[in-house]
Structures are given as structure tokens and as C-alpha cells.
Length: 223
Image (cartoon, rainbow, N blue to C red; front, top):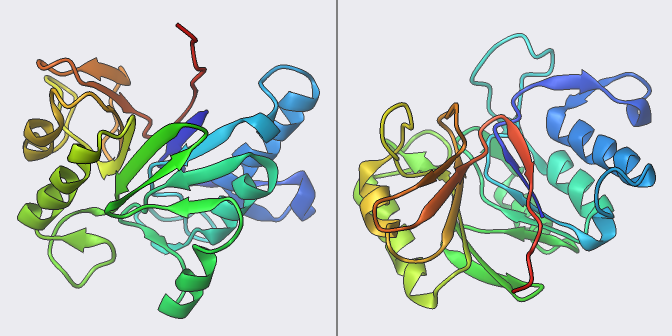
């Protein structure tokens, strides 16, 4: 399973004739190339989890741009077994009618307050961040944490958030989310705030993998 978030940049793609495309599209293409060289597992048998913020300005000349990330999701869906995950606070999926069609596309599993089961893996997710309404993918803090808590009784194996928990010094995040998820068993995947060391364990034993500006390949170990 390939896990990533916060790929807020652009690069030239061979498939696009040198035009600038989002980094997520480039990652999907480059992974497929590496797979042809047997350097990484076959994408046809690899799922993808996206933890949000996959957009960059068209010329990649300013920070904090918000825009359509459907091309990134489609690039992964076209090459990999499936793609699941959440929206970041800079991600859009077109108009409401376009987003409704997009989430029905083959292999696409956009989560926000729900859980899916893919290859015997229960994946739940809440998108966006805490914040004032009026900007994309923001909700009041109490509503955000309540949405996270509602998912936990179903015992997901993987909980995908854009805004994740804090986890000690230099591992910034939301302490209310930490209180909600710690000790509940799920591996928490998040982004939004960059950690120098991406993997942390909370006091109650919950592991948190922060993939802000990273791509991490996870492999299942049979016990």
C-alpha cells in the first residue's frame, strides 16, 4: 500500500509532453516505471491512500493554492488496484455535481465520515481541518472531532485524516484528535503538519504515520 499526502508542487511529465502536472500525477507515473523495473511491488496489486493537499498553483509559484485534484486521484486509480483517502484543506473535486460523479468512478473511494473495506482492510476517514466555515473543507473543532469519534466503534484498521493528532515535541497536530484516537487500535495516517520523524506511538499504543510531503510504501506481514 502506497501512502502519501501534501504533494504541493508541479513537475514536467513524460506522458504530458513536458507540461507541468501535479506532483501526485508524477508519483503515479514514476511508481509505474519503477514497477516495470521490479524495483517496487506491482501497482495492480497495490492500494493507494491519499491524506490530502495534492494541489499546487498552475505555475507552482505561490503557496497555499486551492484547486481541483481529480487528476491526481485518477492517475492513481488508472494504475493501482484502488485509491482511497480524504480531502485536504486545499483540495477541490469540481462542482458538487462533478464530485458526485467522480466518487462513483471505478477504483475511487473518497472518504469523509465513512468507512470502506478494501482487500480485507477497513479504512475510515475524515477530510479537511478544523476551522471557520467559508473556506473549503473546514468545520468547527467540535464537529471535526465528533466525526472522528463516530468512526471508531466500527474498528477500522486504518484511520485516514488530513489534520491528525499531535504526538509530542515537534510533532504538531490536534490534541483533541489525539484524545479521540489513542488506544483505539487503528493506525492513523495523516498529513497537514510536517514531522521530521514520520512515525510516532501515542501513550495508549496507537501508531501515527505522518506522510506530509512523503510517499511511504507499506507491506502486509502475515503472522
